[in-house]
Length: 362
Image (tube, rainbow, N blue to C red; front, side, top):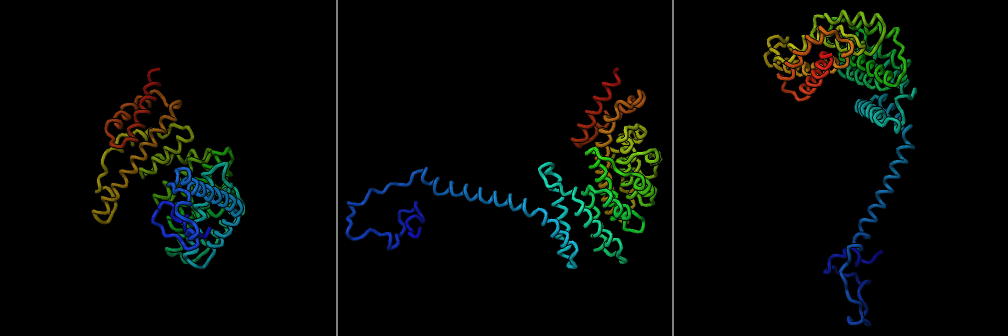
């Protein structure tokens, strides 16, 4: 339509183009009366075409996503292998986002986590990064990021070897802890899917990490052991409930609770008793008062999270608790419920208290 008449149907002052003007042979009386546009006419002009365009775009996006999904991850892997730093990070970040988004889609997704080709390419990248001789800040960041991304893959025979290697003491603390977390992600996901994890060499490697002199490594190793099985794992966790580090003891107790073992109850009782109290900055190891205060605040936050997790663990252990353990835990849970300022912790404490009191009355 070339006429300018319909360009602005609401403006009665619009100037008509020469081709749209009435000819001199027509008198004004012979023209039909001018009527304002109706609501249905306006809807037809704007709403209907808009819906058609939206539908076309939606169909195009859907088919584009379905047809390009396989190419997307290949392109992102190529980006990760690029010598350009910005391209590498863009590719790594995008691939991690794609894997996470696909996993959240569940059955509706492409199940990229089960794609062995993606796992193989990521494992190769990780092997190459671990073989670099100079561990500068940039390399450490790359190793850490790829380790976390490997945690989204299900091909354990492919991803476990580089992740286990990355937990070795010769690598940076960040890389080691992220590799342990990735192993925990893999173990938890396979466990939820009813699949068996090959734990023979893996359990020994994580146990070795739980003996590490680095406190953070011990803490993460404890959490990971909670997702592994075997007598040697259980025995190690029981030992770790007496570790010198408070957070390590709590993680060990939580890990035992996942195995339906109440051996960590004394740790929970201690946590409920002292965890709600303000953390004294003077007990922190920071070099300055400001740093110690920041560390104290972080520890207080961690204590609150630990208390909430421990309260849930106590409920899960209800059938395994002795009468003495319930009698010990009831007043402590009451104290947490009354003293905490955090709604989530209060709700967890009240729920746990009801469970304990109901069982204690039997």
